[in-house]
Amino acid sequence: MNLVLFGPPGAGKGTQARVLVETRGLPQLSTGDMLRAAVKAGTALGNKVDALLTKGELVPDDIVIDIIAERYDQPDCAKGAVFDGFPRTIPQAEALDSMLSVRSKKIDVVLELKVNDKVLLDRVEQRIKEGGILRSDDTPETLQHRLGVYYKNTAPLLAYYGKQGKVVTIDGMAPIADVTQQIAAALDKKG
Ligand code: AMP
Image (tube, rainbow, N blue to C red; front, side, top):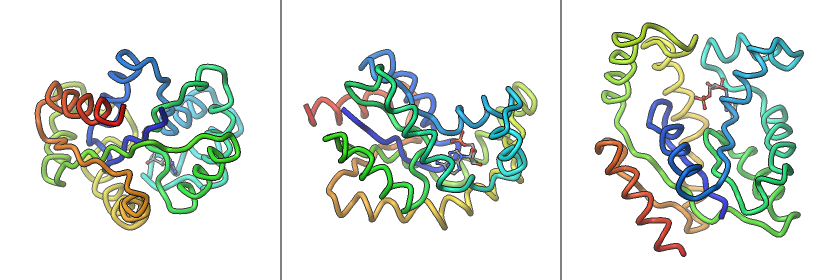
């Protein structure tokens, strides 16, 4: 099964993706994690994208499409994957559809984690209170910017996948265990 975890920054996509790794044995394909790893390792790619990540801007489509295609061809993705933070633009969604279709695969379901902006901002403030700033883009100011980018570039994907009848909306403001439960129910229904 190939599924997309969809939602604004801080909605809990990473948290739920990690649960799915455990419960469904599907690998988590997070472009954000891959890009941060490249920055940390100081690779040419990392140096190229570092400033964009810190500012909360999107990395160019061709870069993330390439890293996803390379990752998806690893053997652990044979039974599918959990796409987390990808796709984020219509061209990325189209590239993903064609990448899967040439491999006789498809996106089975898009799980939309719905969380309102105020809750996202409260969450970032809470994280900073608890642990300080652990990620260069995890500040209230950058989150505001990333939300703007989300509504402009990423939210239109809901209509794209809606037309394909693939979107299941999950209440992302419920406690983590309830969100996990809603996702499990949605996936079990899909078979
Ligand atoms: P995330 O960890 O998914 O919140 O991503 C962190 C940052 O990585 C984003 O704010 C972007 O700068 C970059 N990034 C991650 N995934 C993508 C993507 N699919 N397209 C463009 N930029 C991305």
